[in-house]
Amino acid sequence: MGRIYNFSAGPAVLPEEVLREAAGEMLDYQGSGMSVMEMSHRSKTYDTIIKEAEADLRELMNIPSNYKVLFLQGGASLEFAAIPMNLMKNGVADYIVTGEWAKKAYQEACMYGKAVKIASSEDKTFSYIPDCSDLPISPDADYVYICENNTIYGTKFKTLPNTKGKVLVADVSSCFLSEPVDVSKYGVIYGGVQKNIGPAGVVIVIIREDLITDDVLPGTPTMMKFKTHADAQSLYNTPPAYGIYICGKVFKWIKKMGGLDAMKLHNEKKAKYLYDFLDESALFRGTVVKEDRSLMNVPFVTGNSDLDDKFIKEAKKAGFDSLKGHRSVGGMRASIYNAMPIEGVQKLVEFMKKFEEENK
Image (cartoon, rainbow, N blue to C red; front, side, top):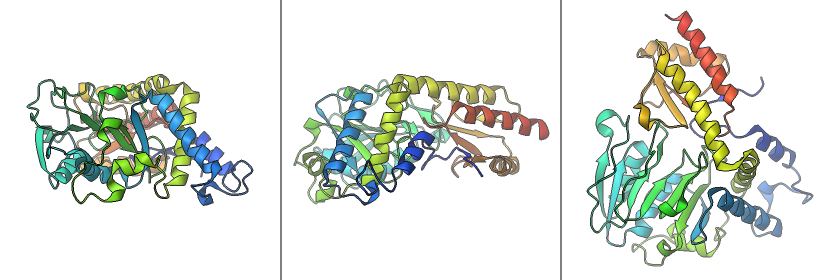
């Protein structure tokens, strides 16, 4: 069997070109006689790999010089604790809860101080983004937290919240590098890479330098201090070396494709193709209000769970994998990250049309 169309929410599809290149270097990376997988992270060769990866990411995102880039472990979920541990100086933080991961981050922050849920879309199964233009920001809040793109529910902040001068912290795991971003609007922008950038095991944290201090909550482990990793340039301990190497290749691939402006056009085109079909379909419908739809994750349902199951089963046989929706939404979900080619979405829509005809 050849390559299938992988619509998994993460770990997710990677550019085929990157996988082939990594395969070609698996046994001997650039004449070193060994794989990056078995190379010392203290070697000159690896030092070049991680420094180049950072330089390419800085160029892609136009990261200002007063921000540090950290390649860490523990996934985005470990940052749910690291953020309050490092940033809760006044012991207060405001959370906008628009999905499962923002909710988990909020619950985690409650363990370290006073976390305030200042807005939520839980009342309608997280199917929209609340109006964040005039929120009751806590006067002594250390930061305001959002999950910018909600993988499970398929919503995306199109406008960042008005934080009234407070530091904005954003989990961008599922929209990382999908479009241009103004890093200077955030204090911290971070995400796990396993959706849009690389293999699971790496989390990238981009953090403004003034937020990196020794003044952290008592009991914060050394490994959870941003300063530990910033001072050591992400090499305090053995980093997820091979994962970072693949991320570096993906950064080069995005640059080659035309950078984040080109990615945005590519992603808008794919999403429009699928959403346009959902909007006119008599059988399938999207679950998110139009203005808050994600370009990355597209949940949809037929309204009949047996029919949903039948569709998922037949789609898998036809070479469309991982279309089963998250249990909290049901139905289907197509994750169409950067590496999903437009023809993958076109073929999926063709298949959906055929299924609709056969199941009227």
